[in-house]
Amino acid sequence: MNEKRVLLIDDEASLRRSLSLGLLQKGYETELCENGMTGLKALELFKQKKSELNYVVIDVRLPDIDGIKLLKVVKFNYPELPVVIITGHGSESTAAEAKSEKADAYLEKPFTVDELTRIFAEIPEKAPAEFVAEKEAAETGEKKAVSAYALLNFSESTDLTEAYQEMYFMDNVLYCDAIKGDFDMALLLEAETMGELHRMVDDKIKKLPGVKDICFMPVETPHLPESVNNIIGTVDKALGREKGNPETVTNANFWKSASSYVFLEIEKEKLETIYPTLYVNEQVVSCDCAKGKYDIVLLMQGASFADIDRNIQNKIKPLDGVLRIKESPIIKLFEM
Image (tube, rainbow, N blue to C red; front, side, top):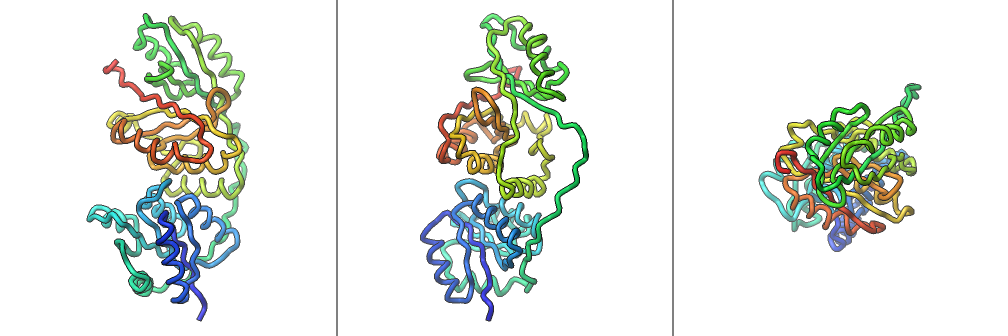
């Protein structure tokens, strides 16, 4: 009989090895991935080669991407592709969440190859997923806006509340946040040309009372391989993100949780791996490449600042090529 193909995404090397050997004996060819990003790249490769795939097995706890979030991405883009969620940290809430995101099965570790293949057999028979490359959308011809970050320091005697209010209502200011750390304020600016933004900084922001220093960082489009851009596109669709404006949060939701700007210096040659991994991180609201003092600017959101810190320490700091990280928590004005 023809071998069926399984994509296995799990960070435990011994489990990948044992399942791969066991599945091979049962007539399944297995593609092994140690994290969520390599799993997404494997899916993209299947699509480019128009190869068939029968099952995807995803661990809930992956080093880079939340397994349930990955399930959502897979199911949005390939709804007929059977997905089995596995976990060594099972709970009723995790099982319920997997079911709500349309997982075809849920299996707690430890389990045997026989148990997994029995689950495969119980999933209603579907035609193997055939990945066909999507047609690119036609150019609209619309003028593309440019953006930049402006990080400001003020003199100690400055009334930051007054400065904040003045900048918040300025034209071309998308975001204005008071922050802790190396800077007092972070602005995200947007205009039709970079020259307009430079003039705005020189004519308006620099002339505000108390402004000492301004770190100006233009936002750049990262130069990534087409396959990586395709992965980012599938994530955007699955998570309902607007292109170029990932997972915008409402003001009401924004203030219900902790939020921080995170500034990264990286090895430029590692951008192809680092950028998409950051982009799909479950706490990253926006991820921008910048030119200037920092290479990447993140806006992160969590249940608490400690929650964000854990994410940075466990998922961002270990990334190969990340040199330095500066976190700047956003301050609520009434707490200043």
